[in-house]
Amino acid sequence: MYTAIIFCICFLTFTLSGQSQVSGGLAITNLKVTTTSFNPGKAESTTLTFNISGAAKITARVLGPDHEYLRTVLDAAQRPAGPVTVMWNGRDQNGRVVPDEAYFFTIEAEAANGDKAVYDPVTISGGEFADITQGEVSRRSGTVSYKLSQPSRVLMRAGIAGNSMLKTIVDWEPRPAGTVTEYWNGKDEDNLIDVLNLKYTMILSYMTLPETSVITFGNDKYDYREYRSSLKPPPVVKPDRPMANGRQISPHFLKSRITDRSFKVKLSFPDLDKGSTVSSAPPAARDRILVRLDVDPKDRDVLQSQQYEIILFIDTVFHIEEERGYLPFNVPIELTQLPAGEHVITANIITFGDQIGVGSRKIRVDKQ
Image (cartoon, rainbow, N blue to C red; front, side, top):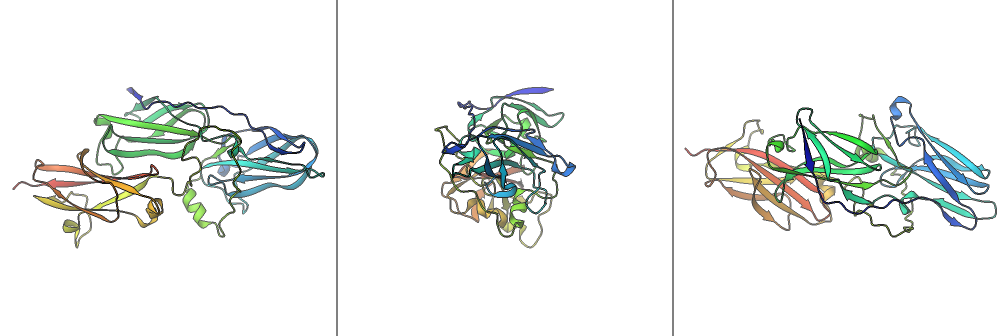
């Protein structure tokens, strides 16, 4: 059975048409891609077409989600006025298949008389944000479905309204236009809480991708973070260019996909875990327990150079908040007011940049 879900309030979005930034009489127009998503691992590709108003040397590049140059598909190639076609097979400059992500093209053209034109879609499109207010959740199939009018990055979170955040289902990942289906088992980050059995709420936000963006899929060997860390030396990032219009964009639009993400919170009980490995059975305590919060060292870059707050919940009910958090964070929790039996302690670490880390762990309260 499907259940209709109301998400959040919508914001106004804008539809923009692209063209080049022109110096003199040269112009790049009518840009299109043949497909907005493809699987490079199956020898699929996409083709970019555009018009150039005069004969020029053209350099066309493929850029990654952090605006880094990954492949030059035309390198100062002389082309006459008229249509130009460029093919990309989903591989970088070294012939390596790129990770599943969203990529876009930039074009630079220079005529013999010195006239120049630059096409940089980030300056004229993308980043328009809104919330989706209608979707469907199916417990039976473990899916959440919704519709997008444009290719976009999507953020989907589930939790208790005005209370704890329990699960980041989709973390600003690129999705094509049309009906989108996400898979979720209905549980929290640590599979301890059946979120769908609670009075939960979902937040589903999106920001549009720059025009001519293409989404690759099918690469299960490495993700974007692993791929970027393996590039030596690091790729060159395109120059910043002024925005060509006054559109309203999401604050996440220009943030790095390396650090603008959710992260895992680790909960430990130093007095109970000491000298032993954490087992699947919840540890037992009677009157008080010391809880320690931390994050994996590989996630510390998310928290670096920004403030964050820490909130603790017991059975999804607010317990304590530290507005200026620090890690590792130790806090004693009184258990005398809790009934005997198993309880779940959940931690939310929320940065001022709207990244959220979630972690939970069970404790058994004994009254004897």
